[in-house]
Length: 274
Image 1 (cartoon, rainbow, N blue to C red):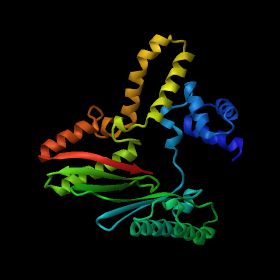
Image 2 (image 1 turned 90 degrees about the vertical axis):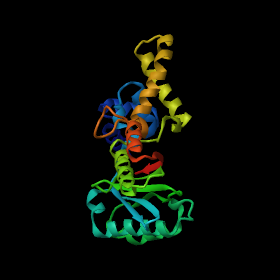
Image 3 (image 1 turned 180 degrees about the vertical axis):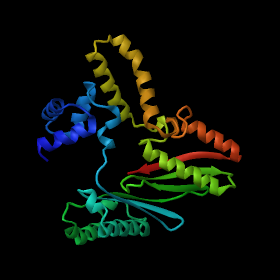
């Protein structure tokens, strides 16, 4: 991809100015991810527009047989193609195949999926790529819920433990609501303890650089860092995020209330999203 094209993409992802994006890309050998980091260090990138939150065209398809859930993402270049019957049928066919083959370790490397795309892609007249897939089955006593956004480009699966819960309909309602939350709030991890150390180190490096550029003393920076990481966790971790309906209540608070009302323990085990 050309520098000009990457500048346009980087501006959309970060909200930074034209020249700032151009300089960031040039200084980082046209590497998009590193350019985003460079802009954030300079305080020029909007945290809410991080590169990993960019939305590409395509379609997510979710299938279930009542026990297993499969979610697959098929990408394309334009929204027009993503809405065509043939493209929708291919995305659904891939999801069905994923559902029927839980034994496959890496769906992106599966030759059958590749052949399905190669066969149909010429009709679309666009670069068509398989972004990935998941095949989940719930553990005993757990429930899995899915959510697909109205644009069919964003979706999630969420598994929740519901030990001792008799109102299964309510439990599924709660799980689906949380699956929708992960899409709407762009959750990245369940809890703060799930954040990889590499991501924490990356954020700390960015905060230190920002603070130094602002002329803050090392002693003051050291005192600020724990609070910065705590804020990062509140923005990215499901349980620490505010609920969509009440921003004064965290998801953890909401689950505690619902657990008490149902007389059982509700706990989010995992989630994935596109």
